[in-house]
Amino acid sequence: MTKPAVDYSLYLVTDSGLNHASRTLLETVEDSIRGGVTIVQLREKHLDTAAFIDLAHKVHAVTKKYNVPLLINDNIDVALAIDAEGVHVGQDDLSCLEVRALIGPNKILGISAGTPDEAQKALADGADYIGIGTCFSTQTKTDTKRTLGPIGVRQVLEAIPAPQDTHLKTVVIGGIKEDNTKRVVVHSAGANGRILDGIAVVTGIVGAKDAKKASEDLLKEFKAGHTLVSSSSSTGRVAAQQQTHVDAMIHQFPDLLTKLRSESPLTHHISNFVVMNDTANATLALGGSPIMAPCAAEAEDLSKVVSSVVLNIGTLTESWSKPVVFDPVGVGATSLRASATLRILNNMHVDIIKGNAGEISAIAKLIGCEGTESIAMRGVDSVGGFSDPAAVVRAVAKRENCVVAMTGKIDYVSDGVRTVAIENGHRYQGRITGSGCMIASSIASFAAVSPNDHFAAAVAGILALNLAGEHAGTRSDVRGPGTFRAAFIDEIENLEPLQMKSEAKVKSVQL
Ligand code: 3NM
Ligand code: MG
Image 1 (tube, protein in one colour):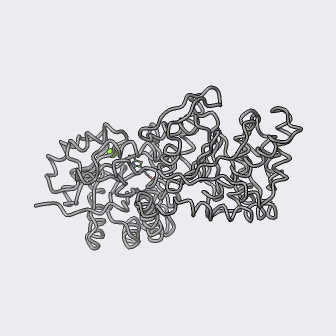
Image 2 (spheres, rainbow, N blue to C red):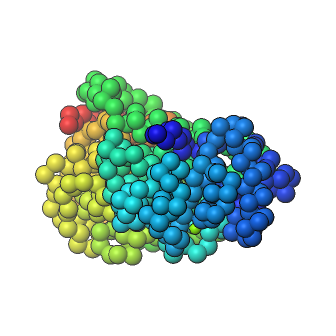
């Protein structure tokens, strides 16, 4: 007899200690199933066996009514006593092999796995699914040594065979909430075609005021994440790469700059002291308004009034509702900057990553982009170049599901589908400090007035400063980087909207 297929999409794990005071655990289970929960695990760490069996009988009566499988955490006696559909064990409990011998081939067997090794062992030992965690830190399980984040989850997913090659299923657990579900699904998707089969949730459902609504919302986000992953890997949008589409985009840029200057959007800069003054002045000259506020304590107040955010390395990990431009300054240079970058990418969604070749190369390596060439970092400046820069930028953009802008002699921007090269700019931009950071500010100002097209914002943001760089660099009174620095700010201010179109050298890159 083969086991019936199990739907792991929304996996409720109970904890009566965290159950919302307004209802019983049984009501939580029933409400959440009506909201879309597809599988339930009874996890009661503080009940003696008799009380556990009693509760398990009652919960099983509910789950059976809806034809939803019930699994018992750890306690195989209880699972056998009530004839539950399966068991979930942790790494410290009986091994999968031992449990399988006790429960037989037809019960569902799941095990927690936090590393690629544990995942492979679970597969070899005959588990049906693994619970990958802990994803985010959670009050529900405080004995966790480290959190994986979506990138760590992806490493586990990539350690097991592709979905078509094995029956093993995967769910993620730990701090999964409605507002991070989609990001976890998208960012954890493996290069081997592995997408999470489900999300396992405790507090997000049992602690919710309305367990049915919470379940509906979680399931919706989970499905949205799946849709995003499948659509970004489809080839149906090749036409968008063509030059005519790029030209159509550039056609909008004069209006975009005019809009920026009339709205003067406020951009919150969480930046570093080396470039603070120049990035603030560049933002003002462009027509935006900067607020330089690196202090975490005021971030929440500011989030209510700003239109976009520039995030330099080493600061906070909040979730923002405004477009975020992430500038991983010198990420390849020190391990402190590398771990800060990984923490930021793991814990929040950034809309646009802006870096030089060295920084983008370091990020590619950090997030496990296959086959990326590496560029040495000397301090915060990169040396050398990629042989195929556009491909690297596109790979990182695809991987992180965001826009990636790589500055250099030629700048490259990609959203994973569209990729362009920008050939404007002046060599003096590379001779003054902060010109890359000013580009991040410019992109953020454009993102504020182009909230639905961050790709266009990134291209426009780079183009505006590159044109100003060309105008400044060719001025007769500019004789070197010192005079260029002042002239650059002037020419940002003097930039005319129509020049954004007439002087643009933006080429679509076919990959
Ligand atoms: N197991 P919440 S994390 C039960 O890492 C459990 O294996 C974990 O609770 C693991 O959804 C966890 O409230 C608790 O964050 C998840
Ligand atoms: Mg356990």
